[in-house]
Image (cartoon, rainbow, N blue to C red):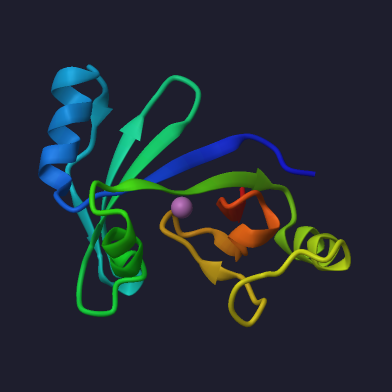
Amino acid sequence: MIGRLNHVAIAVKDIAAAAATYRDVLGAKVSQPLAQPDHGVTVVFIELPNTKIELLEPLGAASPIAKFLEKNPDGGMHHVCYEVADILSARDRLKAAGARVIGDGEPKTGAHGKPVLFLHPKDFNGVLVEIEQV
Ligand code: CO
């Protein structure tokens, strides 16, 4: 059911420093920081030949990654995002298999303007999983 790895998201405390590491140490192509107040994050997109890395820095008081960074003060891998062709049929299949969908179960518009859902990390080996309809 799942398709390509769309991105790996990494939570960071200092997005300028993290972007500089990817650009200057790893030699990657990094975007300018983009504030996404609706999602409570500032994002830097890193284009790799086969996928993307997204650096996420908390934005605003109610950022969904603030608690994660309290537990992981050095930053860390926050989630992986897999592509699906049909998010509603993917959701129904996942729920039928016992996986927990976070929130009310209705797809939200994600950071790329496409429908996304998040799946509980306890059901996926401790990894928060995002599925995105492409
Ligand atoms: Co994501």
